[in-house]
Image (cartoon, rainbow, N blue to C red; front, side, top):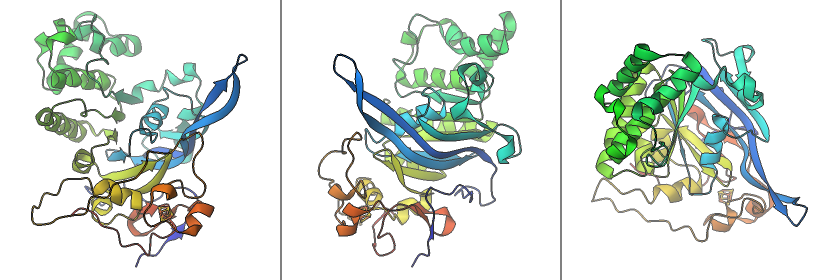
Length: 361
Ligand code: SF4
């Protein structure tokens, strides 16, 4: 039986990691983050409601770790990633970025509240890799221009120093310096994603938000890109927020995993713990779709009925209750609070202690 401590948000105090048991320093702590998009109607374009794409999310990313972020399409994963890199200005909440070696709040900068001008000084610290390597690279720019752009703007590199830096970045991602004079259409999908990674690395960031970085690639190429990301993490001490809907890929790369449903994190734990002992029925349903590696073990596939509800008009109580096979009366009436169990395993479910949910071994 688990013992729980009750908090209103996922507490970022304990830094667990499956790969390293020693506590790690905080890099980014996100607290009660909200991103609401107004719904405008009529001739006067009046605001008649809000799409709550991200609705009160809290989590911490530690230096050098990979935090996986999973959930169905439309759950708010990508919006959350874009808030963290400040492609969107959040409606509310804080994104404390610990830029120095110390991780005290006093040494942190609130990324959510920086003006565009102030952001320029810190933008190099957090970069993003995009899902589609075909559309994320400008087809009219050479690889040199694509990778050099941030170096010219932020580091003011020019001439031979610039080319040497781009050549070095290409080598780091498994391409050759002579590739810099070609255009993106000369490369395969996996090679284009490597170019995108080289561009993201150009400014030596500490955190890279990877938004479905391998989902557009062939399965064999996916493994190569994931291995590259892991090698770069070891060499450069990078942290990743790894957004994906493929739970097998997320399990492979992540130290910890957060599960999102309708704009909220409903479970967060070490990767191994979450996959073997899920505490939220939504996590159990997602895991039931992961192919078993042991043909002797058959697991029930849990089919979630209905679509993800409209984030402009979410269900009462627990947002998952219309699709939850364990729902009781309380679930319709009250939103479950976030509670933390041992080992930093957090969950938002009224009945987490009683349910005996099935994971993957
Ligand atoms: Fe299901 Fe109720 Fe738990 Fe929500 S609180 S996940 S509806 S059992």
